[in-house]
Image (cartoon, helix red, strand yellow):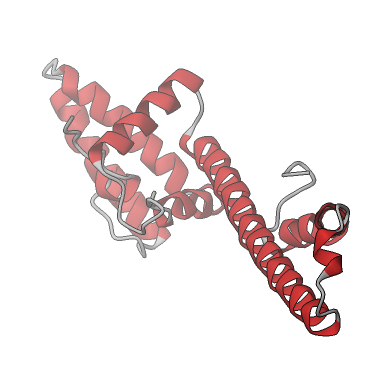
Length: 197
């Protein structure tokens, strides 16, 4: 589905992002005067346009609101492969925003939390993979050393060797995950205490 990109507040007032307060006021007054003349001719589009420019003006004239708004403009949805969002993803975002009845900054905040959580999960997966590869390497080294020490390989026939090693490996991993990996991942990705446990 093809969507027309909605113009931002700067575009609504015909301004650049670095516009001064004076330029914002002048552009607003000029645009409002123009559209009010058309409103007197009973054009319904003029009322909508006056609403849009007033909304844009009220945001851009307030420094705090303007900074918050600029942050939303700096954000661009990207897929995991780094490519810009396609039209279907944009459509999904618009539907989500309408169904949840949330503003763009609220949806943006939720998405950023999701992105941090996803980053945390991927980091934990990477560390877990590294740990088990290391434990497999260690197991191979132990087998090699024991093979050289005991040529008759009696230890291989022991029914408790492999289960014992696996049990110890999992216990160490559980302790490592709880007391190091999860706290480290929350700190690394700046996640409050509500992520993976």
